[in-house]
Image 1 (cartoon, helix red, strand yellow):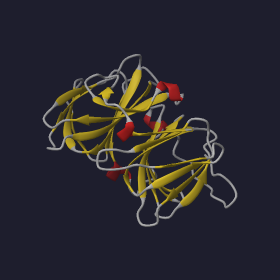
Image 2: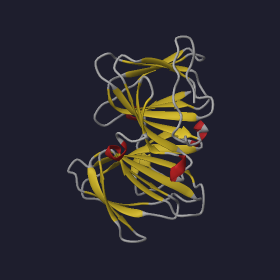
Image 3: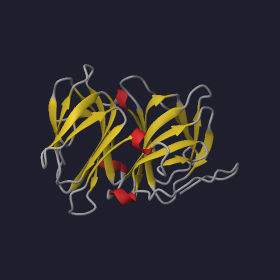
Length: 252
C-alpha cells in the first residue's frame, strides 16, 4: 500500500516536459503505469505526446476548458471538465487552454498494447445510463476505458455513497485511486494497521495505491459522496461487479 497527498509533493516537469505538476504514482510503486496531476495555465498551448518508449498517454480534465488539435488529421476536440482523451504512443495533439483559471489535468502513462494508432475521446456524460455505468453496491463506477478500448490500464470515475463502509481486496488487479473532489474518505489497510484520510481542496487531492493486492476498508463521511479516479492494471473488461458481505472482502 501507499498514499500521496499532492499538497505535500514538489512540483516538477512530467516525462513530457511541456507539462508541470506532481507525480502521484511512480515506477517504484510497481503498478505498471505512472500518473500525475498537471496544471496548465490560461492561454498556453502544450503538446500532449508520448514520453517515448512506446507509451500510451491518457488525459482527464479535472477542471478547466481547452481545445485539442490533433497533428495527424487536424481534428479538433473540446476538452472540458470530466472529459477524457486517450492516445497510443504514435499520436499527439496540441492543447490550448481557454479557461481563465487554467486546467487541472490528470495524466497517465502506460505501455502500448499494440503498434496500431488508437484514439479515444469520451466524456463522463457519454457513459451515464449505459452498460459502462455500474452500481457496485456502495456507489457507482463509470468506466471510461475498458479492455475493448485497446489500452492496458482501466480508467473509471468512482462515486462512493455518503456513509458507505465497504471492504475490498483486488486479488487480480492493482488499483490506484485519486480523490480530488467531494467528501472525505478514509482507507484502513487492515494488514498494515494503517488508516489514511484524504486531504482535498480546490487544487489538491490524495492518491491511494493498492500495489500488493491490499485488503482495505473504505469509509466515507455521512454528509456527501466522495469521488475518485480509479485506475486498474491489468485493464478490466467491464463485466466485473462487487459482492459485499459482512465478513468478507469483495474482489474482482
